[in-house]
Structures are given as structure tokens and as C-alpha cells.
Length: 109
Image (cartoon, rainbow, N blue to C red):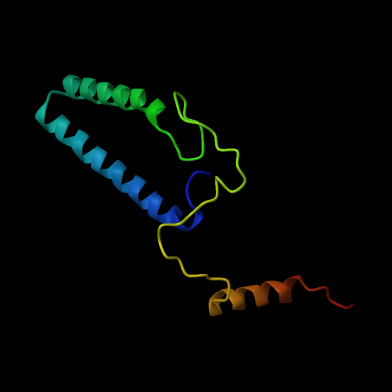
């Protein structure tokens, strides 16, 4: 709910890439250190990241520790930093809508 709709794919890509980077770094830990030590470092890293989570504040929403809720009308409106073209009238979308209307139109029997 906190991701601007036109940017959902970009955010998913960044999150997925972050997971791959984390896996590569932890993979290096398993190469450099013994198994038990690498598992311990991974555990401490996870605990550390979990402890930082309450510091996350999303604009317009109250955080766990600080921040405030914006109750004004339109204060939580989503804004896209990217220029996303309006796809309401794309030829492909128009054809899909026409097909849906044709299949859902009542038939006279």
C-alpha cells in the first residue's frame, strides 16, 4: 500500500536485486569463514536489520517510534517521480476492452 502504483515494478526490481546482493555477500561469508561463524554473522546481521526497522518512517504515516499521521485530505496522495504515460487509450488496451464487452454483452436468444 505504500508503493506508488506506477512504480510497483521498479520497486519490486530493486527489492529483488537487493536480495541477490545480500545472498552474494553472505555467500562470501561462507567462503571466508567456517560454517558456524558464517551462520552466527548472518544471525547478527539479521538481528541488526530487525532493530533498525522501527526507524523507518513513511511520509504521511506515523512510524513505530516517531513521526505523525497526516489526516489532511490528499496528504497521502501518491505521486510518481517517473513520467509514466497514460495507458488508458493504448491500442492494445482498447482491443482488450472491446473483446471483454463483446463476450459479456447479453445475447438475445
